[in-house]
Image 1: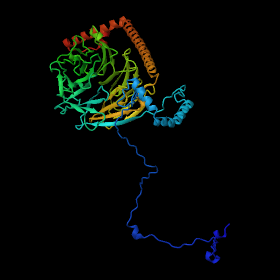
Image 2: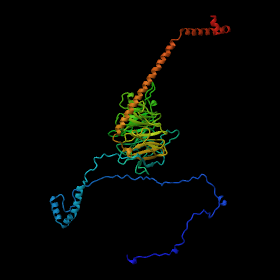
Image 3: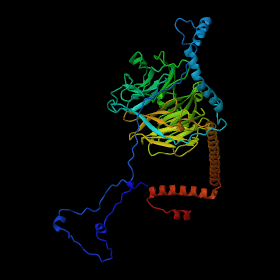
Image 4: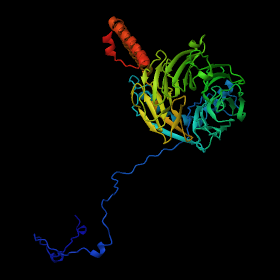
Amino acid sequence: MDPSLIYSYIKLRKDFGHQPMFSEVAPVMLDSINPNKQEQRNYCLRNPVHKEVQASATVSENFANTKIIIRQDTGINHYEGGWPKEINFTDEEATARYRRRFERDDTYVDAVLNLYPQFEHYINQNNGLGIYNIYFKEMESENPVEKPSIMINSVYKDQQKRPISCISWTYEDKSKVAISYCDRTFPEFEPLNRDYLCFIWDIENPSDPYTYLSPPTACWQLVCSPASPNVFIGGLEDGKVCVFDTRVQFDPILISPAYIAHRDPVNALLYIPSRLNIEFFSGSTDGKCMWWDMRNISFPIDSLIMSVRIPPGDQISLANSEGVSCLQYDKAFPTKFLCGTDSGLVISVNRKGKTYQELMSGVFYAHDGPVKAVQRSPCSSKFFITCGDWRVNVWSDDLISSPIISGIRHRKQINDVVWAPHRFSGYMSVGDDGKFRFWDLLRRYREPIATMPVCQDRLLKIKPHEDGRLIAIGDAKGVLHLLSLSETLVSSGDGDKQLMTQSFERETRRERILENRVKEIMIKFKTTEDQTDEQEKEEIVEEDPFKLVEDEYRRLVMEEMRHTEINTGHSFSMDDTIRTR
């Protein structure tokens, strides 16, 4: 090693300081500070002491509403191009001549020679990998595991805070939501509804309505035409029906006369699916259903009084009719529809019936109060769901005595129910407790699979979009909540439809067996009562005849004694008279 690179550090021992000597000694008090009484008087003892301590990290979750981006894949087929303007590419001779002249150019030859190694590498790589082969195609795909989730997308508020009476989606690519606002309680002293505007909202703009409709009175029902997203049908508070066209004006373009309209507000309004989609029918609490043609609503096509409990000797009239609360029509039954009433009945009506009994083909005693919603199942049109009072029930057309599936009783009333459009076993409900519930009959019978507290106010109406992902819910303060469901709540499994149909059929058979058993018990009980009555009658007939004669004798003696007392003033006893005689 080079001596010049070595340097020695030297320090004397005396520069290290004194050597520390450690030893164990007893504790020694260095200082003692006594409490200051004067300072102690300036403070008070706090007992108990509440102190918040956060041991975990603070985490927040935020949602942002973004615009829907529609993506589309397109391709380009480059057939011919890149020719000079003076060359006609449709002339083969001209293109061949130009190609030969261009290929003799030195620049072209150099470019091809430079690109050849790269092309050769890609061709060999393609032959080695086989990028066009589909790997793992024999492996079965599994359904994704996802928990059901619900999210509030947007909120659309009415400045007047009017209750939402009806929700309707438009039939177009970018669907809009049409909302009618009014208080549906009957006024006692003065009108409750003073602002009659109905709003049409664009779901991408929750701040301002897209457009509005101006009916002459409060609008209880609002339905969009399946044929045109600009045409709407309205049911008014004074019993009239009207037609709106937003392309023409905001006011109604057609309105029915007052003398043929309903006597009460229009409580239900539905389109009848047809080739032209120009027919609809309405129902009111006056107990009448009317069929209309949208081209001429000056007079209804047909009408029917919903009367099923006619007193003996009375005729069918509005006096003994049932007030209509909701209607349901399914294109699977062109001549039939379901009618919910204010008295808790669901009436199955057949328009082609010859007699009135055939018209009212079935009467279901559904609920204790008004039937607020009725809808047929997308799984099978033979089954339908109803809501009213505090329950939701599922019924079958083959069994009118009792529901095949009885829902649980809730603490708050249920205001609306609807089937999931594409999930055959699911339905949704809203009520006075402000919660949205999603039920699945194949998974759970007695509790929902997903619950979402939407708001503190009463939820009145629910309307899903036809694709089943977006759900519109209206409350009593005029706020429309737009909810989105996860994929597991939208689509059904491969065998859900078959399993749900089998479940409905099984419950129907079970209820029919129970019904027959109850009938047998009632017949047996009635037979026992009849036998008991006959035995009592025989006992009365077989009484002792001497006792009957004695009772008759006593009655005659008592009459004679009363007659003697009146004439002579002398009183007799019953025993003395019997002994004397």
